Picture 1 (cartoon, rainbow, N blue to C red):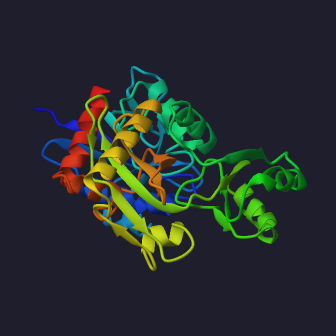
Picture 2: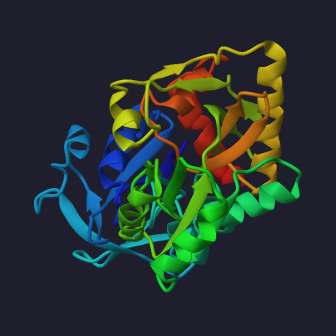
Picture 3: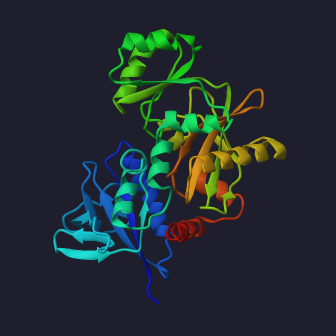
Length: 347
């Protein structure tokens, strides 16, 4: 029986390039080689695509790019090709499914998914439109709010707005507040602002990551998350909880856990966790997610659930939150990867 050809995409023209290298290394190692032929495609920080034929371990430490192991490629927009063109050999290489293991801009925001859809290549994860909407924090909040789910009060601004106008418009928010790039992940460019004096620098920082930003109220409580797997028949993992000593769950804390803890399952009653799971499922369906996603919410001091964001390609190492939540209900890492490929082919 012919094996299914899975093209795993990693890296990317994104501030989350390094995160992708770690996630993709874990996924590639866990793909069942008796069932799948794995093709590794790296995307450089400048956005060039390369077929990579080297050691998987060199991906994680960013030593994958080498003239001896890489050949420049281009995804063919001809649907009959169903794959990519090796620009060195001029060969068309057909693939059965793409597995994008990229985070943030140009990988998780619908752009790469749109390329696959144009080329007629099935792929793992949320569709182009869903990916774009989930990446846009303001639109995602608006759609979820229309379903009656609580969201933080926030304001949207672009680089064309005067800073003084931004400061004036958000005076109705109580400090601390959050200033965030509209479409960045891994907490890049986010600042928790304690007083108005810190607002100007926070705005400047956020605009270095995106040309639109949101300024958002702080939610008193703690963050919880749900891992969801599936297209129509949905599986939800156990609820986790983030315990913070100070500040917020920024990039450093997410990947080092120096002063924070991820507690699984969350220290809540069965009834409270069930309520959080139901809310996460409603959000997943509202934003038309497919394949997999991690839904992040806040659980407030007065026991209300407030939507934060959806990660359509969450961190994906053996110790990441998404696989850990599913492991809690009996799904091991390799089984999750196998199911994701199956779901992508069925989508």
